[in-house]
Length: 184
Length: 189
Image 1 (cartoon, one colour):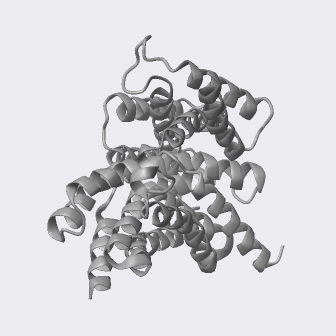
Image 2: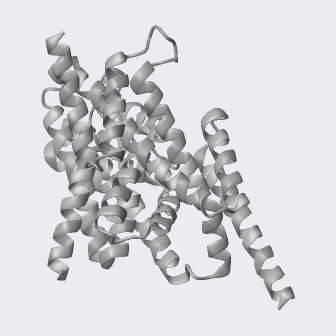
């Protein structure tokens, strides 16, 4: 029974979290803290912090975390399944339509309008990450993280000049950051 | 490459990307672009942008939606299942392990510093890909896409307008523009 409840709750979260990422947070909170009292508000805050520190979408992370707390690994798997099910169905339909009709004039027009917008949205996310990485909350001379600024420049050179693997670049930054911390 | 090898490659690629996607939805797109467009040449750059737009328009997590689309594009329905598994397993495993001892993990200084340093790397990866993509748009030497790109950026970054509205408006605008171009072409001929 608990499996069914977990599945249904996360199915709703998956279905109604439009816009992705943090747009899903209030929805998750309502389901797991208010409606079902599966975790406390404190645990929910911990969950957000952990989600920021670990890879993966926040909705999937919450599904795994809450499922684990309530019904063990089986619960985690069921909740995650519930969470991705709406995406699977809707995206499959969209994919089918896209590949079938992508040569239609009207769809070509729509996509031509969307491509530059997508680049802009990724750029916007990139700028936010860049500022957080180097300045934290707000851009001020005093809050500049010199280590991270150097790491950023190094990463940029690795990527553009030496065509380094992105994952390797990110890991190098993490390792160097610890080495600098331990040495100084 | 036979189909089994394709599935294996798809699974390995998405698993690897998902395990390193720190910082939310849009970070996985540049990583996917590097992997599937630049390295494996399985998808074209414009198609990658189309798939991103579709992933954004559907509900649910961006990373999941984008990997379903890529799996479907490369190896059909089974491909989509393979990429979903590849994308979901890393967070599922990592969070399951961490939820066992999350207090220690959260207060660990070394973990914090590694993650802080990795942020600089993530920023560089995203900016690198954005630069390449924006250059692609600008080099078409058409005014309209450049204007759409600039306005969308201002709307998203400075005005914090919901991404869904930006996608919707640009889509409608593109459709109307496409319709007019088509009409003009017909009248000329």
